[in-house]
Length: 177
Image 1 (cartoon, helix red, strand yellow):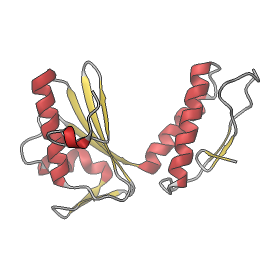
Image 2 (cartoon, helix red, strand yellow):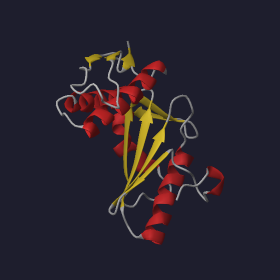
Image 3 (tube, helix red, strand yellow):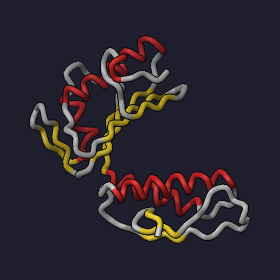
Image 4 (cartoon, one colour):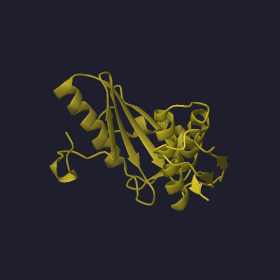
């Protein structure tokens, strides 16, 4: 069930993904500050959902603009790649089995570009549609200045001209040219 932030007792993750065995909260940061208080609330939300719905592997992932993460309320700085070891030591109420991770938008964009390249070899409608979605997302990240390293990818014209998903030349991590 989708809830607005006002309807949540603790906190509303930017992205909440859940399967039968795992639950992932993703916090998307561009210019807003990140706080330890916010991370504590995510841990508490995981714990509460585990009590209500059954225990699942719990993850908190941070997508950040810079390599250095600053927790504004406790004035703590660390490299985003160290989140898995730094954050658990700061959490007030114990993390249980929660796993933390962080990466930059640029690194995330590179992984999406790798997936886009891999999809170019597949010739089916689902791959074509996913390529368009990834391409458009990368173009948006680039337009927002969240990608530090531009790339160029040529998307071939579809073999079947009746394709519902138009392909264009992709430049600068997905911007149409």
